[in-house]
Amino acid sequence: MSTLSVDTITGQTTAANVKFPAGSVLQVVNSTKSGAVTSTSQSSYTDTGLTATITPKYSSSKIFVTFSQAGCAANNSGTDIDLRLLRGSTNLADLAGLMLEGVTPGNVTMASHWLDSPSTTSATTYKTQFRIGDDAGTVTVQYYGISVMTLMEISV
Image (tube, rainbow, N blue to C red; front, top):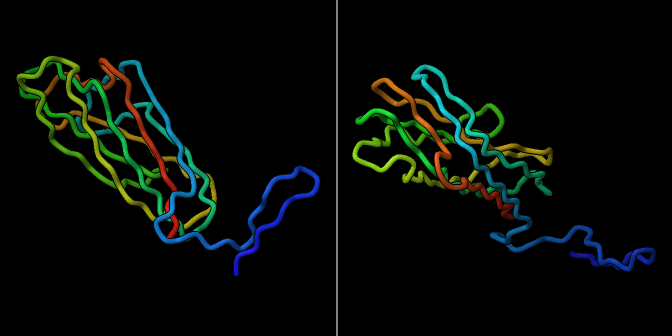
């Protein structure tokens, strides 16, 4: 049974043992990042600087992550860029091999989403990283534009 009460000191409504319907959005966190970041490595990933942190209210909650990585660019025709999404140091998803040939530098935005089950009520950080997918040269994110990450805690 759900119990709602009013805190007599602050006058705020508090919820104790409230069961939200499955699929309810419990909280939303949004983060943005601008400013170019470059990499010349094929062997290791570089942080894009796009991060967001959420502290789930319930360990059973899902976290819906959506992001758009703006301004992807390469200095060589035919160079690919690999992008990935992480929770802490755990790789959740790879967006590999976007070829940047024939594209005006910095006009490509890579976007994706992920439904995660972190099983915690501790602060949880999500971030993106990138590297050169193949060929040689330099790849850049946030060459132009602003990257955005949104985290939504979803009840189950």
